[in-house]
Image 1 (tube, one colour):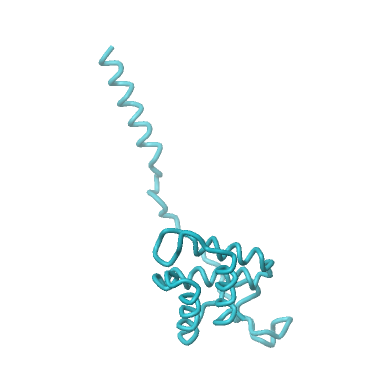
Image 2 (tube, one colour; image 1 turned 135 degrees about the vertical axis):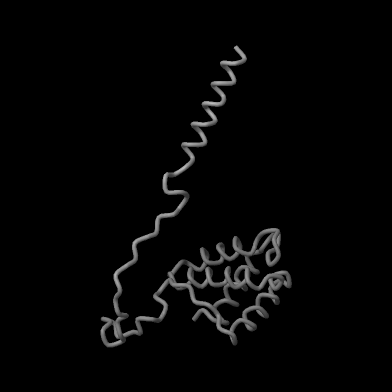
Length: 145
């Protein structure tokens, strides 16, 4: 009985190990590249807008001049928001994308609350509605226009 149990367990472990393996190895397949194209010029776009400019809903990033302004405004809301600049910039870009996508102000503010609530550096345990509104204002006034 002991020998049968051992054999069954060994076979089960071997099957599990083999089924987890891919013949080519993990993620060795490369995606097909898109065909090379040239970027449309301002004249070739239907709206006449610059094709390289972010589209509506696309996340903008603050530049070197705008980042200190944004960080200062976020620290004015709560000093903890300045503890992790990388996190604050990422959250702010996402908030900007929400704004540019045309989300309702109440939804953008709710998303700001979610993004700045937590227990990691750069977040706080609770973000009030007033603080969320000030975060959105900071994003709009510093770089997301």
